[in-house]
Image (cartoon, rainbow, N blue to C red; front, side):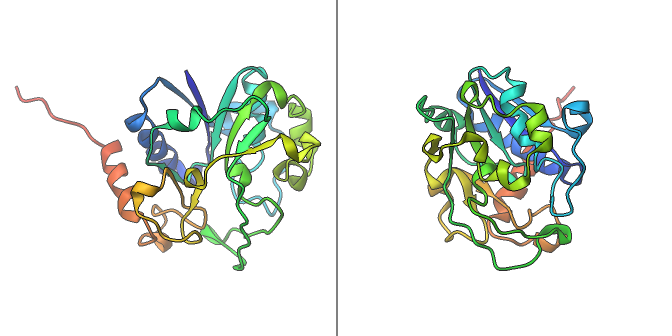
Length: 228
């Protein structure tokens, strides 16, 4: 079973469901998808919201290994994504020498805000944590107490590992930053990340790769009528 945890924010509910559909539609192996919804996490996630926090799952993503009892592997993904590949191909990149594997972006945005006027922050390793392939038993520092008390930079810069050599790299195509990365044919991309704003927001309705997202949304809403 491929275990996938997706960040959930009520303002982007449609994004969660469309991403889930895009994963299931292309998967060649059984997939379990869990939304990281604060309403379901209860006291596991009790830190106060930071003014620089752009989504509900900015920090809850780091509970993924704990929710897996620090056993086996799991994938975390932001909800503002669209899977264009078989997620089993990402799952098969697991390497036990690492605690976590990511796309190692050198992402340095210059704008001050993004979707819904949320702040656009800059820090080392930005967007590395938006897709994470966890080796859960090597991430035991990520207890609920730590996730609720560590600074955002400690979490998103992987300070909890104590050694950057425990961060493995996965190919860039698994976290293509729409609007930042060079435009590619979709056949060269495995996972689209609408990090500045998804096509479900009016201001980004015509962003790059909006057609692909809209088509997946229609597939999500499909309901064939059976003739009597």
